Image (tube, rainbow, N blue to C red; front, side):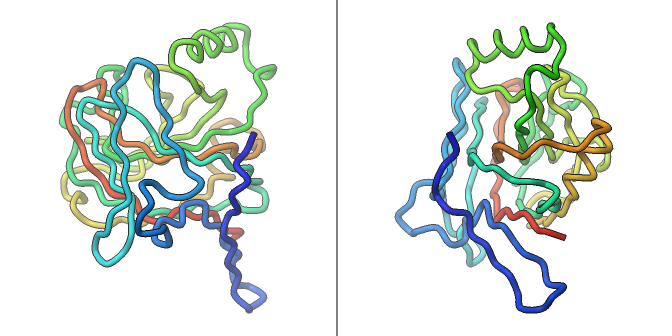
Length: 236
């Protein structure tokens, strides 16, 4: 069941101005809130969770994520038609790299910041082996998507790299930033999710059923800290 908490819509008066769907209106969060309204912690069984908290930084309210050999996400359940809202825009500031991070290896599958999009993809479209793997993995770890795209801040890989997650071919990783030179500063990104999905899978996407932010370091055992700004979908 999807959350009934409303998403914030903003539209300007001009005919060509975009309509904005604020799924992560962190800057408008209440001062006494522990995490943003409508969001929940996505825990993985058997793993120490990353700590997520609302905080003030650079004159605005943002989400701070602190990972110390830990892994969890902060998630919001949604139902978004990418034909209507194809563009995703977000910002984050990465505090440090994960030195042993490596997008090609299971023991390096850690990232100081990522945006995790889960799609409402029917299990019947997967192979028998994929369906069986998902069922087993959900028993062990809890919630596991049937198809997902991750936008990641990598260690050394060049932005634009697209590859399967080392654990599962049901999750695709897209590097949007990397390297030490871009840490410690706010970075803003805009992606056409509709085009990315079509390019990767060769078909139109089902609705986005959840979006998560994530900072994890369980595979490397290192520590990482990042800050996440507002997240929004845009209609053009």
